[in-house]
Image (tube, rainbow, N blue to C red):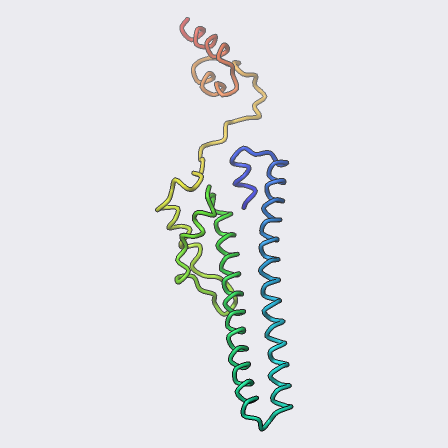
Length: 193
């Protein structure tokens, strides 16, 4: 979530700070939960590796134990694959959440389920690829789910000339954004004379 986006929505700095703090707590809690899950899986892998080595050391000749070792080895490989997949999914989920929070979407939870995860990859550097392209396509396909970018010019300000001063139509146009309705009507009546 970007502060500039929230400022554009008319929020004060205090409101933005509260929103950013709450968003940070949510993301950190989710990330901590995933990290705990990964740590548990890594701990299981380490325990399984110790068991396998101990069984191999204690029972080199027993065929029953060799089968047990083979089963534990297969379990270890499955646990490793599960841990790697969990880490990959955590990285992808975090990339999706980050991309949606910075995209101006109104309903990030709704759109997060729309991602085609088959098109999302992680390169050798650990960078998640394919998320930003899908967000851009969502902006086209589901434009009503995004807050439109409000564009326009910033009104002129800082003039030392008081509102309504000067003569003529050009002066009225130049100063109209700083004048009350009564001042504008008064200036128009002067123009008619």
